[in-house]
Image (cartoon, rainbow, N blue to C red; front, side):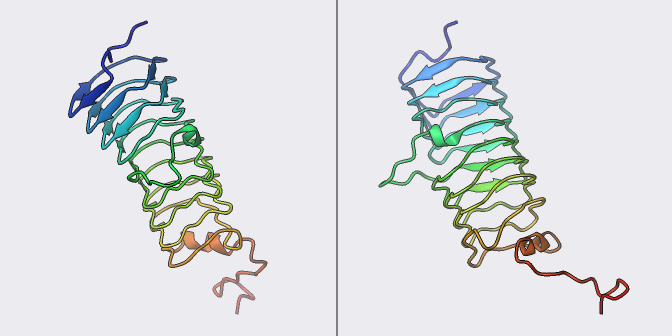
Length: 206
């Protein structure tokens, strides 16, 4: 089925309420465009560019992003479950502006080994997501639920996890330098250190 995008480039345009599941786009550039309440689940964006764009209340579950770039793109209230971001375009020499996710669902997302410096992942649900070996320096991960997510080998220097919940971060296998955590969730950092935590209020705890 033909899709509504018949040009190679769109600049400062707003798209509302589009419903095109399983569409396939290739080689299209969206520059500072806004997508509101659009549904593109299980779609393929191949060699596309989303630069400074905003997606608000959109369904992008299971999208495929081979060789596509999302520089400075902001996602608000979006469904993004099952997206393998490692398939996108992540230049080695030039860095893209960081992405922003606010109030989004990112369950089963894959970010393995990516440069995610200054990423924002605020008030999101990221169950069973994989951030192994990713660079998350200065990332803002406040208020996000990281149940069953993986951070092995990740660089979390100066990242902010205040208000984040259900994370399991092995302090011996991640880089933690000036990383911000809040109690009581930060107790999870002590797992794997082969220490014994004692509650002084419990019998025998003193």
